[in-house]
Amino acid sequence: MKKKESYSEKFLQHVALNFILAGRDTSSNALSWFFWLVTQNPRVEEKILLEICTVLVETRGELPLGFEEVDRLIYLKAALSETLRLYPSVPEDSKHVVADDVLPTGVHVPAGSAVTYSIYSMGRMKFIWGDDCREFRPERWLSPDGTKFEGHDAYKFVAFNAGPRICLGKDLAYLQMKSIAAAVLLRHRLTVVPGHRVEQKMSLTLFMKYGLMVEVGTRDLRPILEKVKAVAVEGSPTINGGVALEKGNGHEGGTADHQLAAPVA
Image (cartoon, rainbow, N blue to C red; front, side):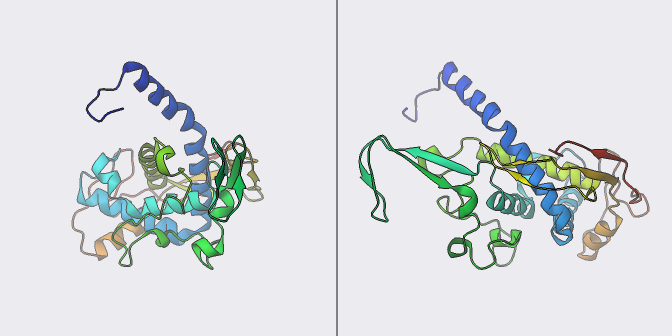
């Protein structure tokens, strides 16, 4: 299709349907793994909260986040990307060979055959990601000074595929996941239910075999706000939805309000 040609209504319908079908289980699975990883890494959770609160204090100070505000959440995007590296929503993919070809390794692939590669395994290979490939470290997606998001080569990080078949909904997926993650973490403190088993279930998508059961407590943002103020951020607007940023108005962190038997996402 030429650049100046308009898109037909049927074409746009197909694209919209693709967004809905392809983005349903993939984004929800990614968020389930993200929330689990965050509960296991309090340092990462605190940095995410600091970033979100800083952005809110400097802007409107209310939820839901606007597009420009979401775009500023680079550490959150790094944490989501790191989640997808370790737990890709689609753990493996196949390519069908149209004509006889030879792979860079010298392997001959005849027409009509299929080549399957493991996206899950690629995200955990030392020669691709280094000796810390099994660690959850969002910083690997940031510039040395931590001020910019630096994505890796699409043929290295293949959670969204690469080349002409790259996922159409990649940007939409990040927008949705960042918005949901920010809204949940600002309001709630999640703790995995004691004894709950978190296991993978390999399928077309990478499910949690038993879902993610968590205890949901009210988030106390006052300690986070104090750290935001410590870096010379003046003013403390209130976030809509009952979460206050003013010192003394934050909700007390307490016991769990209820449990979720299904994945958080």
